[in-house]
Figure 1 (spheres, rainbow, N blue to C red):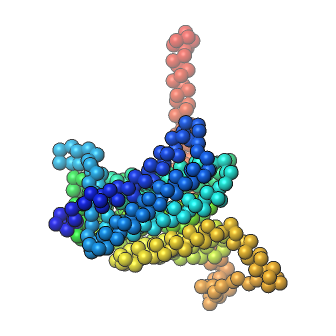
Figure 2: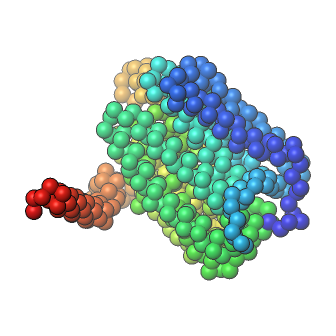
Length: 455
């Protein structure tokens, strides 16, 4: 963004932008500190505080969106200070309000507000009630921080808040072994793919001396242009694509998503039906100018997206529980959104994200009662109701259909393929750990022999 195209940030607009981040962060402290002191708030004050924080952030976002629309969506940069500066190198804490961030904040905080209201009743008398809302407030803070970020450093901080709250909510019912395993699987996948975003930040700082997006691309979204050489743009874009694969559950990092449904239904709706699953798409939309200058990254995004969409469509059709079916449906739509970004579209993916998020959240929130509704319908019809639909492989020979069915049941053999790579690494690490323990024990015994006089 060039300086003459950036509006001078009025105090009122700056306050509203900061409020979108400060409101959910304040509720995190208001309910988190009493819980930390061993005196958690009652259920009703907890839900009202968190809901109030999201309501304030939502209304502030709507207000800023209206002001931006009246001014032709020229971006407003809010300078919140400098984290540190060394010579010509600096890390700033800036927020941006433009045609991408404001619609995204509006629908993300609106959905968090809605889920907060639903969860207050759904988790009534649940032992982890306060813990859930602490993590929901943390997620809302991280999501808004990521969306409003005007530098890759601030974006990375919000990205990590979203990841850790996601993993902790997957393992919310920690008394169940399956929930713990699913949380560890998601957390491990996140950490592997987060290396891409961290490495992209290092490359950006090396190339332009700071993480500010205005040094990477000029003009306002969605008409930005890259300000760095094509080689640098390609490296950064490929790293961002790799980072996005984890959050959007693309092949070969997709196995964690159906397992993530071990968490409470409200968190499944807000994370894997609406917001977290689209975090990677948002980052790629924010950095769309780099993708335009990196045809290799765009081609990789299209190939991976198409492959993941086919994988999710086939595997989702053979799932036996509703939440797994919805997980693969979310994966398929997220894959198509990545394809849309890869082919160069900008506004269409944003509309697709919002529409899919709203629909999938509703479906997941209704999933606990969906089977009950189906049984009631069957009873009203006087027997079993056929809900079967059109099959995309019905035109194939029977043997080919059986082979595809087997592949779908095995989830594309993805688990087996990943374990062929991960298994030997895990065994190597276990042997190294055993050797380290033996070495430490030997050193301890040697030292004991000197001190105690026994050789």
